Image (cartoon, rainbow, N blue to C red; front, side, top):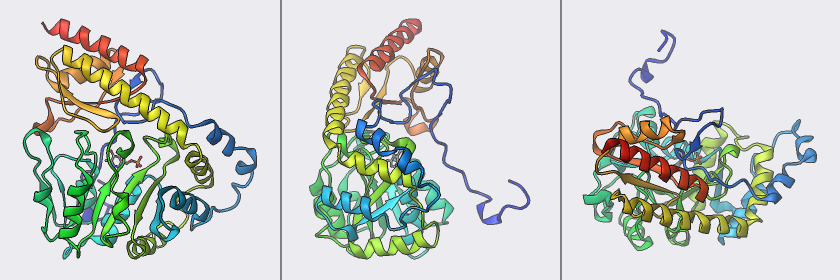
Length: 355
Ligand code: PMP
């Protein structure tokens, strides 16, 4: 920290994203991207005509895309908010709704960005422990008098909870905002979007980065009551009114129009997930049940750090955290069948070496 930086950030520990080597020498199973390229219609949408308009600012209201999303999800445009990746949406959530008198709670094992934002804004925050087997107990979140953020499916565990449990939590805290981060909902989980019309305090957050193969385009969105969307917009217009660029906006519209392509890809990922888990079972790994495009797994004879390093040395990147509660485990993104076969081959080598 230089002597120029504001003192209020003296204790801040920044979020550390997964490794992004730019030389493409690795099989990347570490940041939950899709192994599939965007749909052909997306390549056509980001064309010379669109690029030639880059001298003009994009629509700050993102009307065309918001209409498209509203139509796709059966809500109104007033229910839809756009952000530069769901990370930016999370930033807006913490900035807009939380303060010293409005504390926030989230699971103790969850997306690592939640505590970073809480510290960035100096918010009182509570990390609620998960139960046995990293299971999230809805009762732990009912009527606690705080804003709540829950990733469903949770990261990095991959476990999810049913919509009925989310409804219990949302109903028990009508004066607090409950944000459900559905970054991984399209790989077998059950979305709570149908609850949005019923509860003013529910905000559902999704991303184009996973299921929709657009991590490089940076687009996230929230669906919630017009009251919450208006509040978020006030802060967005006070931060960066042109937060979604023209090319991403065009790509996203084409993405929504290509839903079948992405649903098919998700089916392939889910099949590859079942295959990978079954193969790891044969090697006596313990793997949590996952509804996401990744699995959380541990090897009986090799600790998480050694497995991560062994795989990296063999050209496969997975994610490992040096945090006591999860240091035995690795999070492995589910890629193509070919990628998973190479991952499994390297795992077998590592186990053999450890014997
Ligand atoms: N929420 C969760 C639970 C995530 O794992 C991620 C991906 N790292 C994000 C949000 C952010 O995704 P993006 O900013 O790419 O939309």
